[in-house]
Each structure stands twice: as C-alpha cells, then as structure tokens.
Length: 424
Image (cartoon, rainbow, N blue to C red; front, top):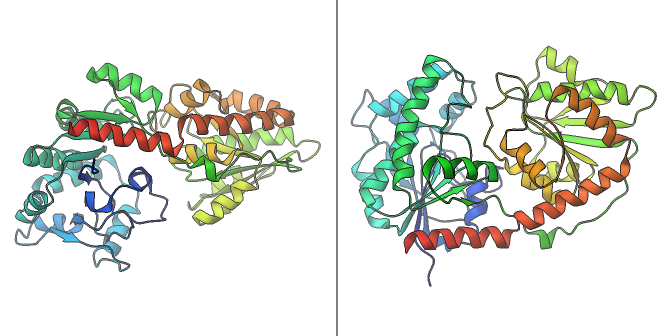
C-alpha cells in the first residue's frame, strides 16, 4: 500500500539540522511525494523531507489588516536563501512578549487576510488523504487548521505536545484567561472532529483520554538505538554534570539551587562540577548565583558540540521551575531533550514538580534521579555524588528506558499505523 498523502499544518518551516526537528524526525523516511507542509512564518524551508510547501507569511498578514490587496499566501520551495521578511520576523519573535501582546497578535490574525484563493488552490491541487495537525497554544493556528479541516473534509490526526487546553499552566490574569477561553473554543472543534489523537507522554494520555473520552496514542521522538550501543565508562574526577538549554520560565532558579547544594558537597574537596551551556544572556543576579561552588556558565554550543559535551559528562541535568509562578508552565510538555538524554546512556538528574509530565515519566519508569522540591535537590544530589555505583546504575536505566519506549522502529510503526487507520 502506498503511503497516504499527508498534509501537515504547523508554524515553523522545515529546516534540517536546526534542533527544531520533532516533525522532521516523525516523518523522516516518509515518501517525500506524499507529504506537503503549510506553515505561517516568513522563512523559507530547506529540508530533505518534501518539496511541496505553502507559506502564509505572518508579516504580510499583519500588513493585510490595512492593505487588503497584499498577497499573504503562496507556494514556496526549498531554498538556502533568507526571505525578505525573515529578518523583520526574527526581531519580533526574539523579544519577550506579554500576554497582552499575544492577544493583540490574535486580533491581527482575526482581522488579517489569510483565507485566500491561493490557499484554496493549494489544498485542492494537493488533495491530501489525511491532515496532520500539531496542536498549538495559538488561536490563529487552531482557526487555520479548522478552516482547512472544513474546506478539505479529510480525516484529521492531532498531535498534542504541551498543555494547550487546561487553565492550570497559565497566569490567572484577565487577558490570559480570556485568551485561553478563546483557544479552548477552537481546540474543542479540533478534538471533536479528529479521527485520531496523539499525545507526547503517559500523563498527558491519561488526562486527554478523560477530557475527550478517547483512546489517544503516545508518540515521541524516535531514536535509532542500533547506532548508539550502550557503553559503560569510568567516571570523571571530579564528577562532571552538564546542562544544555534555556534558562527561561524559572529554570535558572533550579540550576542556582543545584549550585548552592554543590557548596556543601564540595566543601572539603571538589567532588562535582556543573557546566551550563546556554544561548541566554545572563543578568547580574544569574551570573552571581550560577557561577559558584564548581558551577559555571560556559555559553552557547552548536548541535554537534552539544553531543560531544554530553558524551564527556557523567550526569546530564534536566530542570523545570519549582517557583509557584512557573511550576506548571511546562506541565504536559515532553522535551526532545529527554529522548536525547536517554539515548546518551548517561545518568539523569532531574528537578521539577512531581505532577509535571517529565518528572512523572522519570519516576514512572525509574529512569532518572528526581528532586521535586528545593530541599530534595541537596539531599538527592549529595546521595548521588557520594555513590558512584548509583550513577552507573542510572546511566544504564536511562538507556534501557529509551530503548524500550523511544526506539525509532517502534515510533515509526506507531505513526504509520495511526495515520493509515485514520484514512481507513
């Protein structure tokens, strides 16, 4: 049976080797003539995945509020060049936005022109067998997806990778609550009309199955474990911990608490070091609280450099915030970093609330040492650093967990079977 023709509707263009690669990972190996992508950023795609793209340029949608004649959507092709509007767009999205600005953006899309004859022509000519919709916390994306669903009348497979529905993960301000209410009204239409729902973590499956009376399917990034066999290695002296990633939404505070705990552990001799690699620019407070007791911030790395640094580590650090303001921001998310950590065959030390999906996952499968409070950070870290056998034990547990639950052969089969069943 030939692969069903899939139309994926998302935000970012597909660009190989950028780190934003979950959907590329899912569909890698799919017949490139049986996949097309509609997206809403100004950048041009550059990927081996497929050759058929339709771009709805957000900067042009903004301009169309006042200039209705502007052409906002067009078919585009793989290119190494940067689109004219891309630099303008980067300036917009590299800034931190308030909830009020996010709401203003939704009204721009509400008033702007994106339901065009060019979009309709692309949908009609491609004539997909099935629609694959990642579910985003953006009203405009849900509206776009609902329009395409109604226009094409094709079966829908949803992919949910974060808490984009409940009120638990947002600030309790009038603007945030109104935006979430609006979002939920659009998402309900998607969930009600979906043939299949895919989620990213066991905790999310349990919650969404209750909410929507469904039997969702768990799908995460797949790893080819045959290419990365487990190797037990001698530990460094001092023990080397590594964190790679952003410091946003309170994560830096969790890292600062680890640095604080290292002061007691390293009091008489340096037993452990933590190197933090991030693209973020640090405040003076962050510099002071992170660069101490054997913990130091090193700056940014390329993707290849990240892999090399992680290979040299003994412990990989995963953190979410324990602050009340941010505790549930990433409540149902499941970062691709987790599968990469599991693949590495390194011990994982994870910090976060016990009710968020990553910590629930690590505890459910006993694949990491977890700390779910500030007090536990010092206790668990000290216990781990003073027991090298435990570091080695959890290195193997992490790898075995990844091999059992995230093997690429398994995840590929799950995706193909789910999409094929939706078409039937």
